[in-house]
View 1: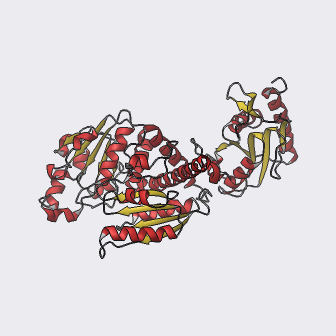
View 2: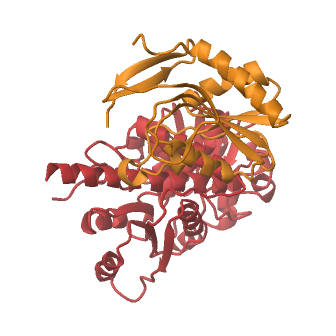
View 3: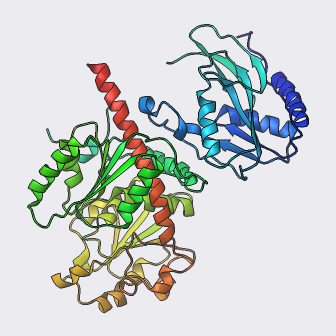
Length: 169
Length: 331
């Protein structure tokens, strides 16, 4: 457990990286999008630190998952909410843990059903080095090699903490 | 081994695998359905009103009875889930109903459909099909005789919940031809299950079914008494063909006694919702000014109906998938 980093420290570092990224790209009107559930917490924290006046939305990617054929719908699906126009927007897409990349693939597909963004920047708290798709975070809190059979989980919203759990499938 | 509809429609984990009736379904399951429908409602507001959930699946709309609204909203729901849709309108006039059903079933099975949406004039038809087609096919009841119309009930529940928040303190009146109405039956069951404390049915004695008490409702024969202070008024369509059977004196007499007009609506709470499953008969059960008025959510019901049917279809497909896996593991 002691190997897991503190979320607050990662968030401060990510906020710094994100500011630099926005400056370098001359993005003045980003929109923040968090992926349910952990990604929304991280998005809210970064949004408050970096651009509190920017619009903020949430995605529940349940309708876009690639494993409906195996698992069906999860028991709880929340409405996605993007209270801004996606067309020509610079989207900051935020999730907690980048694992296989399948969630991000689903989120990108969902995002494009709302419109054609000018750009998408991927921000994740952790990358656990288990990617199955060519998807990498542009801004990353930390990379982490997990012991076999373990998963890392973000609990929150207050306090935000990382914990190790046994993988269920 | 004939399973009762409410056992037949759940898999071993208690998930929906067919949707035949509200009867026997838990409050949790109905709430999950409404929550899922809320998410699908949001999909209907996007630039691309489509999600890839049922890509590669085939949904068969099998309608033995005419319907425009129900069939088209089921069709739209399936298409917004990216399923392929087949519409079969089958007239029951020429052959006896048992033979027609059997023949049709065999043809449908051969088409390898993943889901049947069934409307039939006979009570129990969807149940009959769910019991006899191959077990992987989800059957959705789109109205069977006088028995049930569960997706209509759930879209009515979604309408009430979106406009009133919950069911805890509501008075809901269902008005009109209760006797012949599958919508009324399904609505009474759904309201009860979701915890509505005051369900009223308002109808002439001739248009009330026997055993109405079992639904836990209050019965009124006088509209002007029954409507007092209700939060929601659900009007039912008066099926004009019932006039001939002598159950009703005349259309104008029915309208005078049971029509929802500006005057009778004023007896309900000032912001009471006006609902109707459609098609409406203006000047028969509802005044035009009321149907088109500020309290009417009749057209919203149609929009909500698409989201509810998307939720039902994806949940039933989930239940079938899980059941298939459970069966494979057991073998």
